[in-house]
Image (tube, rainbow, N blue to C red; front, side):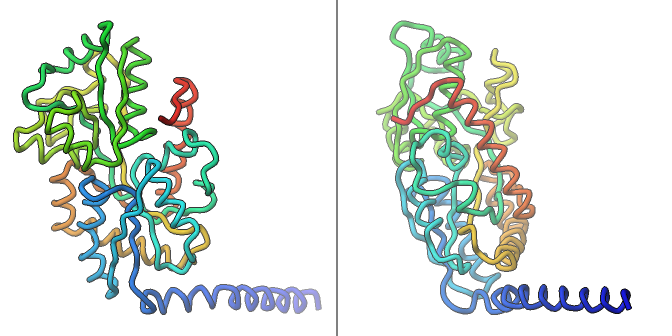
Length: 327
């Protein structure tokens, strides 16, 4: 009798679970047939986030059989675009394409209108890349040692980044703190505006991802002085790392990710993850990303979420230890 009761209870539980998962399965099966998919790029055109999104869009459109729309929603180090996606319907049709600033904003920007850990879920971390400290071709800065010497002088040195709280901003603040160097930060609203001023010589130094800097290095309009990875970048083998230049252990890679509203059905997130993994690991797209200095990462939504939460923890400590405030 007890065995029969146990079996009946098990059947009831399984039936209940089936009822719960059936709607999710139905959503996953019908998605994305309802409408175009929107990728909200949280930085302006001309920067690496926009370039990566536009690189992926046509291939993802082909893979999913649905139109992909790119919308730039910028400001506040990417938090305005991220907030819009956090508040969007969790139906699998709206995603944020974010940069490493997403891992910094929770500790840097007071009163964010969303919870970075709870209101957004990671679909995938696309890849990582070194940041590059560069200067315009006719600059007085010929080597990274020149930057250090300027930082030690009474005048100090000015540098631009893609925005307050960006990884470049924090990396230079950390460098200044550890080396007792004087650096003045000039925030820009994305990689495009930063590169325009760097090429024109309006800002003495610029720090940005290799993806946004490399084409200007190749054209000879900018000169690379150092990279922020722990090892030299294969695309820039002659450019020293900050770590090997007297700052052992220094490392600050850039990264790109795609996020969804937190309550997006897991089955949809999984399908989107699988589609993006297939696209970024295809020979054509992987080659294009690598040519921009991006090391393709990919993986599961769970591994991506863990990566981003680690970044939040790491940079929260840097913000606190260095008393970094948004400009």
